Length: 350
Ligand code: MRU
Image (tube, rainbow, N blue to C red; front, side, top):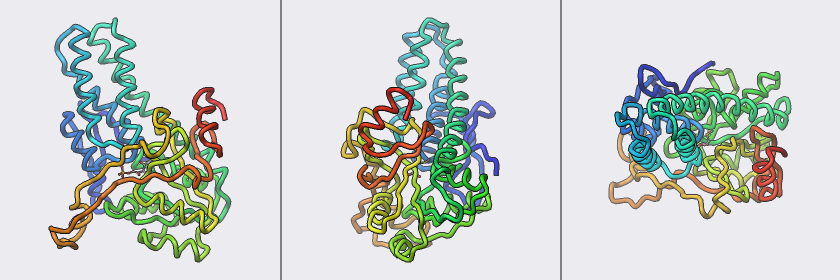
């Protein structure tokens, strides 16, 4: 299945409305940054790399109509657009990476006329999109080396085509292994409360003829104990300097369970997800979302009383000690993560 999850079309940002899947496949064309902000907040576009690319396109969308010709006024506008988009979701590093890359590009060309800077910014958005497509394929390439014929892989949330520009990180590893002729099975955790596993991962794996079985999140331990799972592969929203990894809520419990059952636990992520400025997982901001997602969404009638207190963190942090290896576009990083991440980030080598 070849699918472009995000592109610039008809003077707007064309995305797939992921909240409607799998029942309905519908594109949205976002023509202003307020619509984009809401699309990110409401997970119409979601997944760390996809959010990063959408935000970069959002910067261009936000400044393309700016009329004044002096750089100081342009920069003021640019900063406002970036600050606004940065407030949409707090956890995925890629969001801030995409925004900062656009800011840097504009500043590097401050001596170019404003109309020229806009063109350069547009070019940068296209480069970000193409880069993600290449990077995901490299993650798939390296990750597939860890996969054996007839392996069964457990995953959570959606770190696939829909979460990136068109190939996926954790699921990119599966796609690559399949392209190599390996017979792979996947168990997908449904991923309460927003059901990205049930709605999105199952949808895209089925479309790509991957053998997938859906389980409820609370079944993972029993499925591991039964000996059905060979490997766990998950995506990431932010990786701290020591390797602690924030990803969809429930990832940490899978890592703990994997350790208990002696199953390798892999994180697949591009370098745009690494945050060298954050030393450990304790400093990663974890998004908390509205109670209605737990109590009401996807149910005909509310499943809990409106007075019920709810805690709804969207992500959790997996301690680096529970991670077997991190699969990146530059290769596979093994422990000790603090040391090895630093090495890879500074000299591009593993
Ligand atoms: O809340 P979501 O659906 O944006 O969460 C997404 C995840 O947790 C993904 O695993 C992560 O962003 C990696 S996507 C390649």
